[in-house]
Image (cartoon, rainbow over all chains, first blue to last red; front, side, top):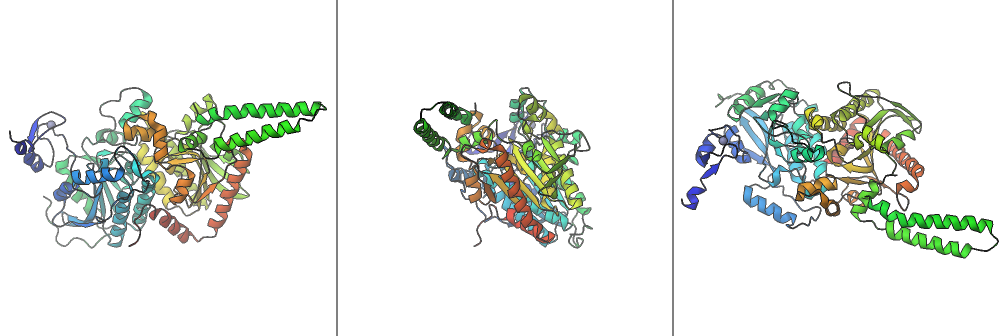
Length: 278
Length: 317
Ligand SMILES: [Zn+2]
């Protein structure tokens, strides 16, 4: 098999089935054999959601090296490597679009860029998104995927939990409507800030969600954890989230939920050209 | 083993010898003052060598020193304290001590993390690692403070939020997120002091504050050095190396604008003069509250927003 052709195939990490990539994309990156939800690239996610155009904001914000972090691989080199690998400038893409005719401020995190960790740029972009949503009277939809705060930016990274919280709170206090969608994985400083501050918290089926990492817990308690521990379904049963949604149903569900926000104190005029959800 | 405790051993021996000589000198006609002075000079020199310029890892160990004043010591030094228990839902989390208090005559709500001193107490306080119920107690107390118009003072000392099964089952992430959310818009002044270890989101959940104070040898970090080493290199044993890179000392954090004021400690650390340091901290907190009490509510909240908004923001072009 030619290398180029081989690159068109990928193996499902759950059931081992070989899948032709274009088929996988057409199936929203869900394995047609076992239903495993692959982690999605931020721009692929955006493309599956928005009606037409997506206008990015904050894309020109790039991380520095505030700690002068030294390691086997210097931090700026890690960033460069991830930029090339992920075709992203940072771990979140933010902007404006409409979903099913409802204009929204949309943020999508991407695990491919430094594990979706939150450093200063992720925090800044999220804060700008909520500030812009407040000014434009838009509901806010944020997809989270994160390993937590980014170690290489130290305390400046931790402080982004405070910054994003303040922006969410100001948006909420003005009457804004906020939906978060927790995708695989959502942990640490992101789960403990804006992910769990939404009016409605959705989770994608089988996503891993928690505060402490699974390995940290296993090491602390020195016992093996049950398979479903920290899954979206586990959190639903414990009452921590509003709903678990299969990816194929996600857009329709978001459109339905966005509709309940049209009367929010901070909301745009009712949609004039609402399209039928795909 | 705590590296500061190790380094202190030689000094403690010298201290004992000086004390012995002094008592002998008092009982004997022989003049021993020159000898005593020489020993005291040696002591001071070693003390400067050991504590004058500490590495980040030594600071971490100082912050975890077994004799360092704990959250409860600050609470006990308040003029008055009426503890309020529980989260009203599940249980009373003993890693968090909170309630009504008076500080220099001022009515406040005081909240402290406490690691516990001896083994029994450590277990009782879960080693200062709050579960969701601890953060929900914080939320309840902050709401109460807001309701009654009482300023909030917090004392932060935790290696991090509890990473147990039960904590995850009861949504630790949500509890911390909501604690931050509550502090973000409270209408009363909030002053937080990092007294020992400020570990991760579990510490920040008590420190989204109008003024953030820090003891000189306290540390405040994105994750505990052990946790960071595990995340970065899959090896918690490389904690010392992580500590040297994370920029977790008071010098670093005042430079980053994350901490507003550093409270100096005596040479050798806060435990060399526990009651003196507790008094000094409470005095600094009182001073910060004086300044904040003069601000109209809207300005207080606006300043809080801008204070955190600018951290890590790109410089204006
Ligand atoms: Zn599969």
